[in-house]
Every structure is written in C-alpha cells, then in structure tokens.
Amino acid sequence: MPAEEELDVEAIAALRKKRQFKKFSFRGLELDKLLDLSPEELLNYVHARARRRMKRGLKRKPMALIKKIRKARAACGPLDKPAVVKTHLRNMLIVPEMIHSCVAVYNGKTFNMVQVMPEMVGTYLGEFSISYRPVRHGRPGIGSTNSSRFIPLK
Image 1 (cartoon, rainbow, N blue to C red):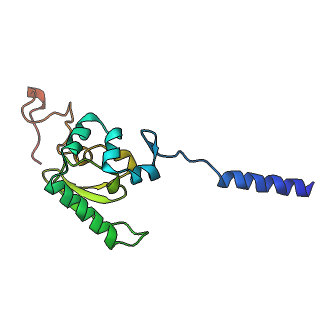
Image 2: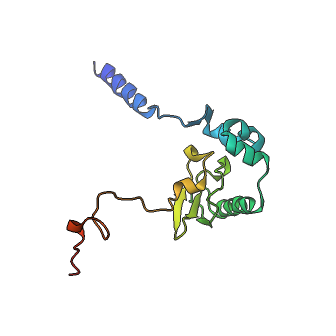
Image 3: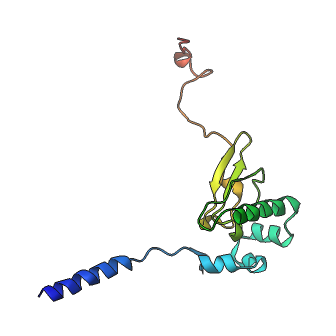
C-alpha cells in the first residue's frame, strides 16, 4: 500500500510540473515562429494599413528607432532588461523585433513607459501612451449650474 501511495504522490507532482499554460499565438503563429519571420512574411499577418505602410518601406526615423532598440538589447546581458529608448514616434508599428524591449513614448507632455509584449505586434506605439486626460462627467465646476457655482476658496 505505501508503495502505491508514493507512486500516486509522484504522479500528482509530475502532473503539477507539467501544468499547461496558455501558449501565446499571434494569428496562429507561436512566439518562436513570430520572431523568425522576415518583414515580407510578416505582411501576411498584419492588417491592411500596416501592410501598406510596410510595403512602402520604413523611413529614416523608424529605422533609427529600431537601431536604437537593437543597440540597447546588445548592450544588456542575456537575462537583463534592455535600457529604455525614448521616442516621439507614436505612429511606429510594433514589429516582432521590438518584443520584450522598453520604449518611452511621448504623449505631448511626458514620456510614458511601454513594455512591448507579443500581443502588441501590429499595433502602434501611440495606442499605449494616452495623450489626453479622460473626461470625468458629472463633476460640478466653474460654468455649470447656479447651485454648483459656489466653490469655497478656503
């Protein structure tokens, strides 16, 4: 009996180790294959606007950003986080080469840190750095109704 119990405990431990986590896939591609894609092959997996922009070629500023990201990656160790790269390019498409890098995106006032994750491929950097303060409706303030005009000055 004790031998059977030990086997059961070992089997349960093995099952726990083998727990399946949800594998990331970008439109049917696993992360390893996504990182190995050439820019021409990536065109088949992004939306039409991104496809058009990539076909017309990356201009000087986006290429400079990618070079800075490559340089930051090369400068850090294999297990370290790369240095933050600041940019004003809110319209830069996120490509697989940028995954797991830190980019500070300018929102018109400050630089917001963006940790590029695999789910972000094909989107723009500006989508992750909000450039306005969302409206809070229903708060009384100057210029509203007569009853709420009085705000004490302390």
